[in-house]
Image (cartoon, rainbow, N blue to C red):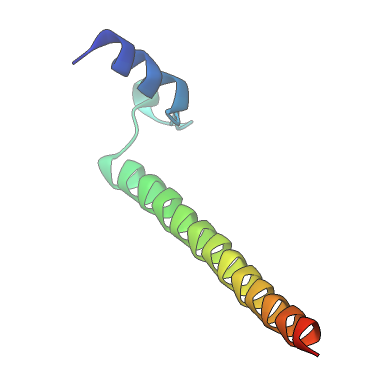
Length: 75
């Protein structure tokens, strides 16, 4: 992999440190890691859905405004 590409990916990467307390050597159980990553993934998908709906609503509003403006200009 190109070194510049790798550096670019490192800059935008999300980093997580799972360090459970009360375990031997602070070792995380695989089930815990999977649950944490799944919850992060679910949260991100919800965020994207909300952002998409905002854009969609904004686009509809803009379209209505443009159509109304066209009506005003014709009259």
